[in-house]
Length: 115
Length: 111
Image: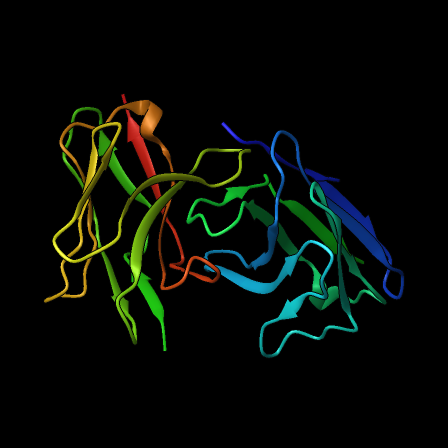
């Protein structure tokens, strides 16, 4: 089946610094990628949707200047958390799909801890 | 708006027991419904889906029926195995471009 990887799987950074998370589709071309945030015992919250070569569409309440999303190629999307604060600590998950298909493939997630 | 509510876990069962995980939804249109499974250390995987009322999705012994009258999509399996231990997420989407997830239900199956 289709595989999506995320890197790093776990990152610790200091408050005020920026951190980049990569999401790659390894064996298919991802025309659309989604970024989710998951809090403990809570559902996945969609942060933004990105289409290759276009600006990301952010969900209401998500600061686009803080969570920078780039989908520069059909196999790579990045999420950069700028000027991170402890409240940004969370589990970030990406998923990817092709065209209008319902099937999205999930990465294993990245645990971000901001100290 | 759209939302999904599923039963809180964890659910602990003995091997070969019957499983039900409840899921209800609220939607403005006629969404497609999904169950995803997340095994430890892995990403979510699609388990089954149903795209219209009365459809039954099935996979790996799991089943769920799209009940429009009760706005439900409960997940069932007749005989669980230890290998079914995972977190299960119910989700809906009305256009395959935005998905709404429940909070997940952790299933522990004991030998």
